[in-house]
Image (tube, rainbow, N blue to C red):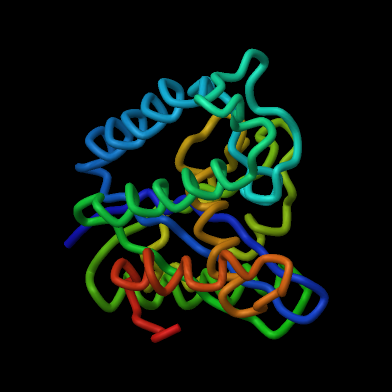
Length: 223
């Protein structure tokens, strides 16, 4: 039996939606946050990105915004504010950091709908079934505003049958700006989506999920 904090984010378009959860064993939470902080410290030392800067995957990998006020320039005078390739390189390093986290699992479900509530409901049902079959337990932590939470996710939790459910409590809502693990889930969800959608403008991301996260999937979808 294992217990997980399941940090979850979504991605999608007008055709389909998906949710991806980063399943952190509660007894390893401290170790894995330490590993992630080491990654963020390395990013700071190399490029000056503060560890409390929110890495929003879409903006990060497309070179939007300036993550550093006083960037560290390389020998050619280039820096992470102006060279999107540096950001993409560190995104793949982030995926490798996840891959090395012992006991961490990835759980992704895809729904053929743009309705996020319906897609989240499917994600919950499949996740709950997987946990229950293994005798495991989980608490879902979702990106959002704790002060003004969307009531729809909590309603989906309460639809789970209490007699058998393995997902504990209503969803916990945490703003990505203050949660490193929600930011990790954002990266994983976008990687999963781009692998399936194969947007030509994001071709550099097409193989990120199968290359770096497939081996961590709780249920192999052979994507």
